[in-house]
Image 1 (tube, rainbow, N blue to C red):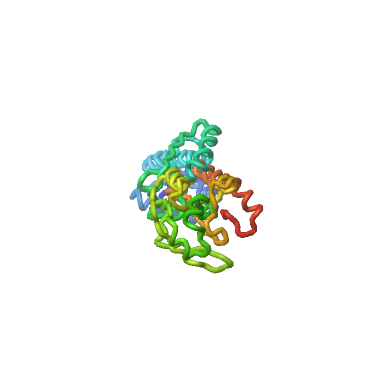
Image 2: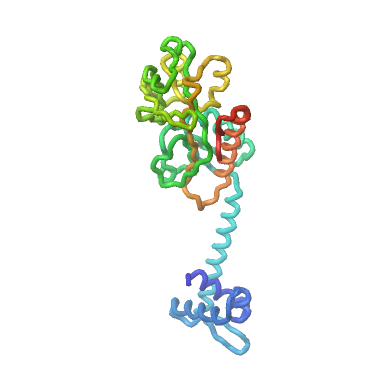
Length: 311
């Protein structure tokens, strides 16, 4: 029996002035109440109660234990009340780490709106394309794509993005358009350092997987620089489809091997503990998923190929 329970039973017994009424209030038998008080007396090495025909009374030692027990129980009740308030609170400093392309296109604008809705909330967002450890580095939340990496925190998948291979039509005119996966060997791949290919892409078509060789020609950790490299005709790259839908429609970019499906990109939420409630974290995750669903809805409504996002 833990000491906190023993102290709680002891204070209830004195408040009621009766072991029988204390048992009824605790929902246990009178003998169980008596046993718990005896355990507490053993732990303290003191007699805590006088038992009389009219009920129970505290000894001098019992009065001292009762006083301290009340303070402990009151402090515990205040703590639980504050934790309950914290769960529903959207205030204080909230530190979040997000990779660049999601941070700029989806999460950053969403957090600005969240900040306007909750004026007591102080959001500190870091754009960084590295795998942070939320526990050791003091983040409340990290949103990552591709892989989790090593962390002492808890991670769960919140979305799956459809990705595509693309380049400018001018680049494909110059290098000739690949017709099958092995033709990718002729083209230069512009790689984000977080998106390590290990020499090939697992492309899919008709339920079969085809390993497509990848020849890396340029690697960077800045999405803007990667897009600039593609636009200048340096090579092709891979990105979530929703990010370049307008450029595909305008003809600025063209799909590479459009009959094949590029690998999906998973999105993860990582936070220090799954047991600690945090309404700020939950709102951020909920709004991120909603934003992605809204961005992808036009595509998924018109394309029967596969769903672009799963929560």
